[in-house]
Length: 474
Image (cartoon, rainbow, N blue to C red; front, top):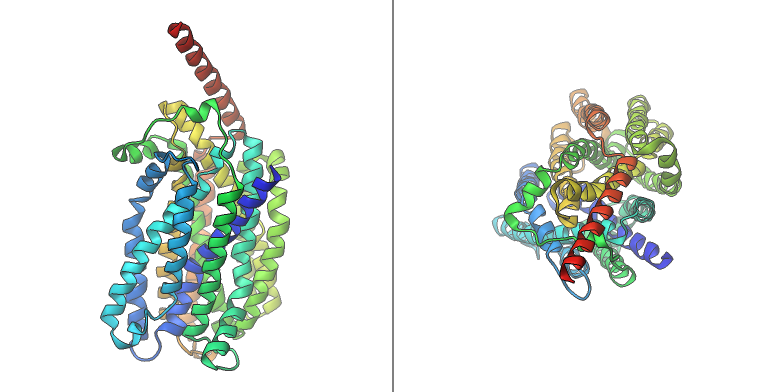
């Protein structure tokens, strides 16, 4: 069992390193290295608009992708073929995204936008296959809530290290490759630097997927055998009829969007408000240490105050972090303290949401009579993708309207620009978090106790049906 836990954690490490790179640092690459000079803001706007539009369109296909995964039947299982294919193609895709598309960004902008659109569509589709197949393995690894909590915990442990490790690695790697391949000096960020960084992240993502591919095994049980093929026309019906999944999805969307927007804009804060982008690297170290402490505490804390307490209480702690952010100003130490308070509950809130979504597989099976693992679990990646798409657009809008583009200095940012920036990085996310907590508190009723009762009823029902079938066969 330990081998499976480690393998799943390694997969999560690479997966979230990829996710953080795509949703947090691509906007920085576009605004600081890919497009500079006259027309840079408009060109960056075109790319980010394409990202948002393409992702919004493709979101409609995520439940269908979940249906394809659910309908897969191979000797390797239903998840692993898609996990491997998705890892290979998406890793190549992110490398191309962090490039000038073989010089087209300079020589022919129209062809660049066309090539970028094609690459992004292919990358995003295969990333979705990887994302959905990886996280929808959770209900297949065990139907026991405690074992699921362990898999979810080690998975989140790995993903926390992956996403926060990127924060520590991004600027050192970008600067290293900038100096190595472009001959630049100091802290200059070049296209070559960002490309080298993307190659490292692509390799880490692929190696993590390989670890999960070879190191995990699907669990066989009577409940999991009670599965029918999902028709594509029914995938949205499966999701829509699961009321607990829908309410949790809305709450988690507001939570994810608030976190991703703030997290993505922090690097701008250090560069354009404080004037020390190198100090941002420490944020990764702080959050990585806190993730190591926070995630293992989840099983103990959730056993004492339940998932509801973790989710709502964690959001209250994040709101305290926002208050500290607003008083930090240009004080770097205060920023570190505020970020520590803000980040500490985040992995546990994620786990509370993930475990609730996972348990909604049996809830939907009990309520509607069919089991849909990947279709149900596709909701979480779908929401993260939606939050990532919106955040990419929001980050670029915030940066452009605040004047935080190109080689701008802290002294160049006007009071009006600073107000706009603070509105996007702090004020709007605080409102979203409050709404998220209220929805979870009053609309999500699928507790651990209720799930255990559902599993017992399902097992009893299926055992009775199996006994009746065996009796009639005789």
